[in-house]
Image 1 (cartoon, rainbow, N blue to C red):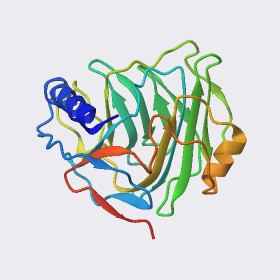
Image 2 (cartoon, helix red, strand yellow):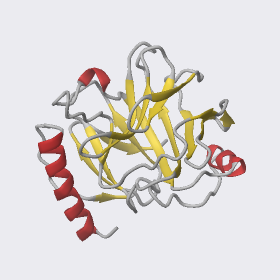
Image 3 (cartoon, rainbow, N blue to C red):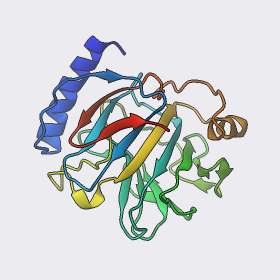
Image 4 (cartoon, rainbow, N blue to C red):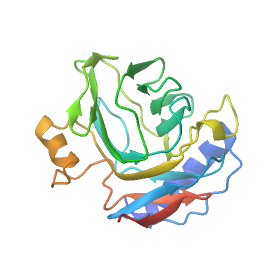
Amino acid sequence: MSVKSYVVYLQNSAVALLTVFGLCVRLSLTVQVGLSNKVLVFPYETDFSFVALVPQKELELRAFTLCMRVATELPEERQIILFAYRTADYDELNVWREKDGRVSFYLRGDGVFFHLPPLTTFRTSLCLTWDSHTGLSAFWVEGKRSTYQVYKPGHTIRPKGSILLGQDPDKHLGDLEAIQSFVGEMTDLNMWDFVLSKSAIHAWNNGHQVPKGNIFDWATIEYELHGNVMVVDDD
């Protein structure tokens, strides 16, 4: 997506964020591109710090793979939003660590929950795969797949929403909630509109070359920082 298209996208997103989610933010339209060898640091709990992402294509999806590397010091009983994609009326795709420590994702309604190794101060390589045709969904931790769960076969994720890291926008709650915000580090977030093979997920986990994400590619990702989010070298 071109910078010009991104500006239009953000203008539309700003209207959605301000009028639908009721957020007291003003988008500065400061476009930044590419986070290769960089880490996003969310240093502390806030109700105003987040990263807005613009996809390379609309998220009208019947399958996807979402991968990221994440670290947090937050205790397991603290709910954390890991990824939020919302249209005007629904949470189309949200990924959470729940208050009981399970990791979950939601596609416009009730979610599906997985018992995974805990997220800790040490970086975890985390992927999520889902295929509408079969409903098969799984998390992958350090290249190892969880048990499959069948979730929403036949479902389609709808386009024309807003994607945030660090916060969960919700029009019913109004402003963003600090108690749900992400605190920690994120890096190497990539997303594809298909399910990666087991070998490709293993390759990504080990830092090897894989097909570039055709929704988000960390090296060329377009994003905008808000609040106190920092970009630091991945050393």
